Image (cartoon, rainbow, N blue to C red; front, side, top):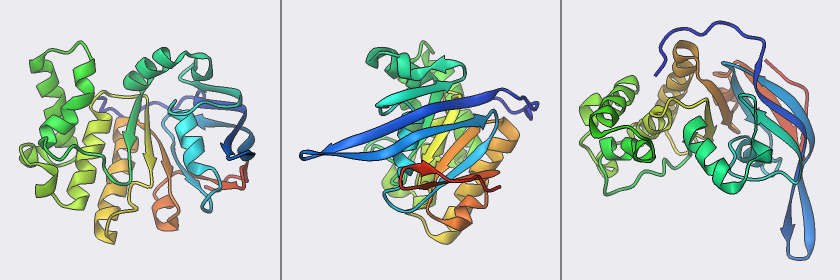
Length: 236
């Protein structure tokens, strides 16, 4: 995991060009995003805000390669992910995207160590190398002393820190977080936001976070607003 402060670069890590997405409900086509075009700088901490149904999570899922566009193109780290096949996209996600969810998505019967190790099982790393990566990731989030605990033995904030360790253990290009503080009390939420900010500042991770909470958005460097599928002006 990189720990040096990154040098400033003009090259965007994400480029979206005329991205549109709709879903079918019954016999109706419901547009969610329409002609979205913007760039996200390398090393950015971006918050996506907007009312429920504005398309925030859909946009995040498109950038992360979880969902497919109807039209337009998305480039991440110079790769046009919208041109990849499903199998290519799955491999790309595993190497380039760290996911942080509102409800942690930890496996209850596995320890913190085992949960964090899961993404590494798909890599060529041997057992010793995986252990080194997992222990480093858990140290980064301040849970080296909890690696043998299962999720039920951890607080909500600790579970989310395990989820963040799992997200960064593969040293991904992007960290994408969908309402990462939505299920936490205020103190735990602040700890998680400070951790994301530190990963962005000290490790150079590009972070894209969906949130409805203005206090959470304050931790980001840049805020973009979605309104009914359209991108509003940026606010920093």
